Structure formats: C-alpha cells, structure tokens
Image (cartoon, rainbow, N blue to C red; front, side, top):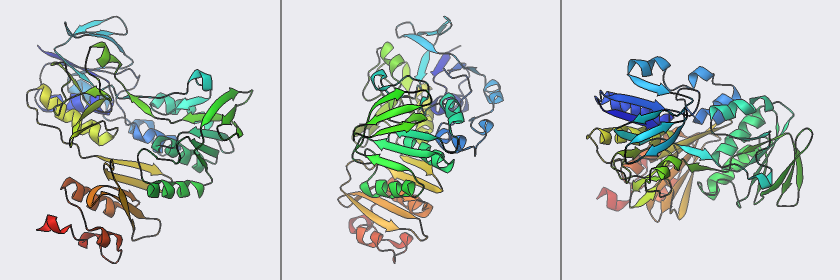
Length: 409
C-alpha cells in the first residue's frame, strides 16, 4: 500500500488531503500538523475571532470526525524534524521514522519577529499568525489600555481595528513612507488611513521602531522620529517568511519559497508543495500568494498531480480584509501598475480603485462595493479591460462600461 504524507495541517494541507481522497486515492494518508488543534481558518484570527464575533468551534475547517471517516491519520502537535530525500523517510518530533512514497509540503509561512536587540522575545510582545498567538494576547484587549502596532500591512491594520473597536488607545507605526506600501496604491492606502483615523487610531508613517524597553507594567517604545511612547503591549505585524526549512533540508530548490512548477512538483520528483510556502509560475513571472483561495485551489490541483491526474494550476488571485464595518475585496494582482482609476460607489462610504498598466486592467480594490469587485474579477479573469474614461464616469452604470475597442472587435 502506498503512503502519502502531507506536512502542514493548515488550509492547504487540509484541502490537499481531502482532495486526494475525493480523487480516489485509497492508500495510507497522513496529515501532520505542529499545532495542537485540527486544521482551522487563519484569516478570522485577526478579525472576527479577536473581536469575539466568532467562536472557536467555527474556526475549524472540518469536524475531527471527517478525518477519521476519510481514513486520514491526523497527527496534531507533531513536528517533522527531518526528511531523507533518498530513502523518503521522515522523522517526527517524537523520534518516529515514517517511510512514505510521496510528500506534500504545505508548511505555510512564519511570522517575522522583532530581533532581541529591539526588545523582541519579551512577554507582552505578540505576533499574529496562529490560534495560540490570538489566545495569548486576548487578555490584553481591554478598554483604556495602550497598544503599539508595528507594521502597516493588512494584519497590523486588522489588529488595530479590533483594538480601536474595543476602546484601546492605538498607535500604529509603519517604517515605509505609507501604510500598505507593498500591496496597494496611494489611493487605497489613504482611504484606509482615513478610516482608521476616524476611529481614533494614531498612524505614524515613515516612522520605525528603534527599541522597546521593558518596564514594570509595559514598554517604552523609542521611535525613529525621536518620540518615546509608553504602551502596555505590542503587536508585531511586519510580515512573514515562507516555511521552507524542511524543503531546504530535503535539498529541494528554493526561490521566494519552495519552487514548484505549474503542477505543484518541486525539484524532487516525489516531493510537492502548495499554499503560502510555494512559489509558482504565473504569466511569465514567479509569484507566491498568501491567500486562502490560492491555498485551497493550488493544493487541490497538486493533489491531482500526485495521482497522475495533473493539470496546470492557473491562479486567479483574490483577497479580502475586514476592518471596522468595511470589507475590502481585491481581485487580481497590481504588480507593475502605472495608473489608477477611482470610482465612487453607489452608496456613501463605498469606492473602488482600478489598477491599470497602460490601458490593461490588472486589479481592483473594492471598499464595501461588491458589485465593483465582482465585475472587476470577471473582467480580469477574462483578460478584458474597460475603457478608463467610462469607468471613472459614475453616470455610466458599471455593467454598461464598454471594453477597449480592440477587445470588442
């Protein structure tokens, strides 16, 4: 009987294991996760779970009975400490050696922590990546307390929104000239910044954290602009690194993550990868997507490859972020954009930002505007681009915006 091991029990790992069974794989199947819990959703951790809107049991992707019914051996609280690529034997944290025929690496990404020289490692400094992280800081979110958020990406901004809604005094620092510098336009960043300021968040751009000094009841935070803040705790959201350690141990090629081809195969013929940890070819470039849709869809495509039923994975990037009463929905990738069309929505507090490279539509950010998101997603997936002038004209209904002339010829 063949044996497949899926290493990493997150969204991608769970989806890959389930897909193997759905495609008819009848061999031995082991899903290995370092965390104590069965596979769960990560995005709500910095959103509805932290705010108390979502209970723990709603986080889990599937009931534990699913894994038993599907014949999936789920090993939680178990780390893989070694992979021998020659013998295809993996070693577990309890010393068990497990021979396998194929390996799927769905090892996700790990948060970047503050270095010890800046005060990292002290109690009261948190990252937001796992359920354990969210639970560890839950007691800190009390009205009137002071929190410093380090990092103006989506994780930091979502944590800031939860803290502000709970009545905390929130300061967010971003070392780059503006928040969301790597992922969004000036227009979107300014819109989001104004939203946070309207809720009392003190956002300091172009301002880095120099050092944290632990005191009796909190921290003194020395900032690069010369200011010193007294805060009760710190949330660090300065990014993640792909989980490549096991792949490197197995001698698998790395390129901004575990390098896979369009079918999810690594440089080793029996080792595959999917999800946040994997980089793959897309439209003539190599990308790595940190999103739930990519984790699921790439994992399911890779499962097919492992069973000899593979088809190339074609990513259709989309993302979302919940902050206060705003749902930001993003379709496409804005890499390489050189102009942005702003279109106010039909209702107050709604807007969409359309990213173009020349006349080609690349992506759309839709703030509380699901119609704009869905229309943009359809255009992008079809390789179509609307006329920019009509798109900016709100007297033209979105569904009536014409496409570029050459696309309708």
